[in-house]
Structure formats: C-alpha cells, structure tokens
Image 1 (tube, helix red, strand yellow):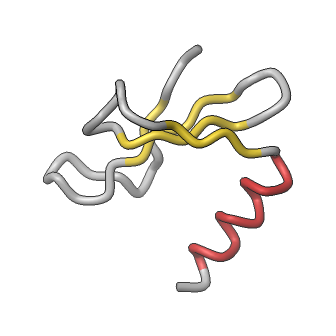
Image 2: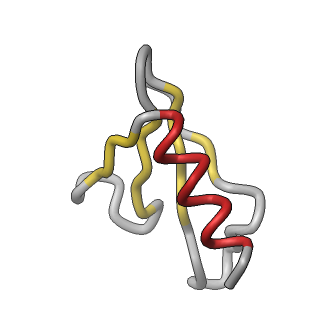
Length: 56
C-alpha cells in the first residue's frame, strides 16, 4: 500500500493527513502517527467527506 500526503497538509506540524488507494476503498491516516489508527472509507464516503471539509 502506498500512502501519499494530502495536498493541503504541511510540514509544520499542522494538519498532516495521508491517503492510500485500496482495491475497493480509500485509506486515511495521520502522517504523524503512521502506526496508529486508520480509517477505511468507500470512495463515495470519501468524496462526501472531502465535500464536507471543503465547505468548512
């Protein structure tokens, strides 16, 4: 699995989110804690999350 840092993440200790394309889902994790908890979302749920976050 290949994790990539989200475009809006930064290196100053702020919002550091990484995502990974899985076969049928999208993985989300905190890049500061790569061994910690991870979310697994369907592509539809991930798009809904992004839409919601962009409205904030």
